[in-house]
Amino acid sequence: MMQKKNSLYLLLLLMVSFTSCIKKEVTPLGDEGKNFVKILGGGSPAEVIKNPIDFVNTAQRLLVCDVRRDANSNAVLNTTTTVVVKDDTAAVKAANPNYLHFPKAWYTLQSEAPLVGGTGGTYTFTFKPGDFAKQIYILIPDATLLDPSSLYGLGFTITTVSADGTIANAKSVVVEIGAKNAWDGIYAVRGPVTDIITPNLIQWANQPGYSDPWLDANPGAWEAHLITTGATQCIVLDNTIWGSCGHPLYNTASAGNTGYGGFGVVINFDPATNTVASVWNYYGDPTRAATNLGSPSSGTGAPLYAASNTRRAVLDPTGANAVQGNGDILIKYLMVQPNSGAPAPDYIRTTLDEKWEYIGPR
Image 1 (cartoon, rainbow, N blue to C red):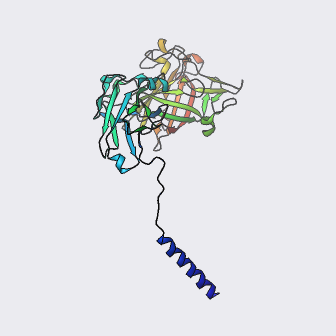
Image 2 (cartoon, rainbow, N blue to C red):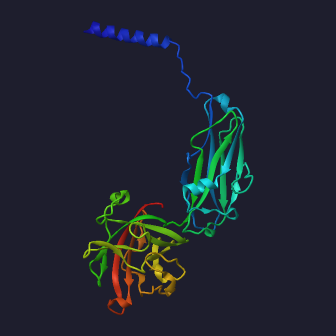
Image 3 (cartoon, one colour):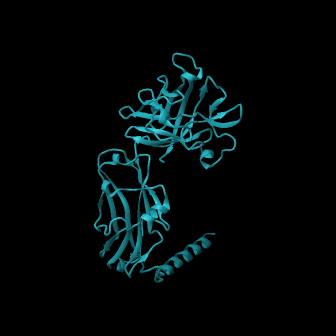
């Protein structure tokens, strides 16, 4: 046995020695010597990159286009390459027709290549030997000029490159810009809804006939979007049933989905304590737009924000009414409706004691 082991060790040693004497050869890559240019995160058609900014009046700098040269050899890297990037408004519209034009008066460009030709014009970058990246930044001095309920878009597409280069598939991006406060986002809403006038109205929770990937991933919840309307204010949009400012409900008597007409929540936060400062009824504020759940035009406005059907939203001080460390919101609020038959003097018809689980950004 010892002789066999020694023979194996000797054979292994000879093989290693022989291998070390063989001249190593590297097979060139098929793209050796090529000079690809691309936009980081880009595609064809354009990839959308979400770039939310804080809803504040202090300057914010955003990277909106990052052009890269991928040279597959040192020799190619040490050449000069010219790249033309278009301010692509058509790509913006193709990505989302609802994107608004981002007024140039609201920002300044920071780029070594100036925009020539205004809207729809071009940037011409020169990659000198050793250069591999060129960026376009914008500086937004006051994001409170933006409509926080809207999204804006900027588009960039590589259109031409000098003869030594090749345009990669990742050639186009659309940058989505929206002004958002710290509480803006997507939430999964759960918790009891108690209506003393119509007890068969309960919290909506993945009821029959409604199944999609979001609902399946968040069982027992409906999808709420908190949409920035001010530095410390959001409206609560139901993205499961109504697609507007409202609260989905389930009617156990008719086994059907429903909701309160003329009732939706505007929520105000205290940034110093990260608590819920107040709520009021969206449909009681005549400055708001009409939706499929009613028109706020006949609302009373401040201080009660009562809708034309007398419904109001009031924060219940017995609730936690605070933002948790993980972004979840614990909130307890009331629907007050004097003409519903709810008992005086408070006329509280419905109590909503909810947890809004933070899912992520919109």
